[in-house]
Length: 360
Image (cartoon, rainbow, N blue to C red; front, side):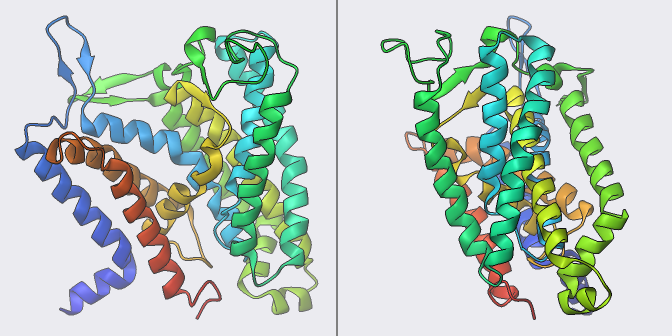
């Protein structure tokens, strides 16, 4: 009993519960003859197994989950305004698309554009967070929702006329979903140095970008600025007494978080194969928040290891539960319902453990 309590204390109850649920669902999937590993079809083509799908989702959501770290460390809490960074990344992508860039060039042009937009957006958001101390998570959620709706109007008014992007009958306004196959932009990083081992496909390029982002975040949080951010988030009164500018640190943290959100949606889009506009970014903060909380983070403290563990378990569970739910409940689509129950339950648990975000 003591060992179980120690394990729960060090690993975290959400991590144990969700990890156990993942293994349980994998077992149910195997019992219903769903494959964990890639299968070779009659034509020689591969069909992706549940473990391969989990790895793809892990890389796809990696940077979006990593974006939570600087915000949490600064004392703002989980960045529920992640859609701010996401819409900046989407704007960079559609601009690069409209200007005729294809393949790897599309990614390389999208990145600096997205960073530029995100730095401006992140600065304004950081100033807003400094003016609403104590209500950051609530205001952040409304801010993310509001900006997503504002950009929905922007997608309808941008003066792009490329028929691959615009509504087919009107010729104006961007489509809900833009296919990246049209510019050879789909799966660029997924396919870079990709290999298959023991029946599992590894999207090497996407994983390398994610791990590289984790490494640079690890370095940043150990820099002078990163240490000041963590100190201000841990004890703002002591940090101010020590001569640190806590407000400036919070702004810097939110700028970094917003930039990671912008970069994360570029990685997500190339892996998914589509650029999704309008209301699609609306709820994208919640899987990222749930992921890092599952990994063992709290609304006050987060580390890189929490990102790696949480994104792996949560996205692995999502990749497994979708086909299993469809198999168990044929003719229905309960996968989205299951995802919402899991992610929102984890967020609710974390907030109650932290006393509503104020800490204990």
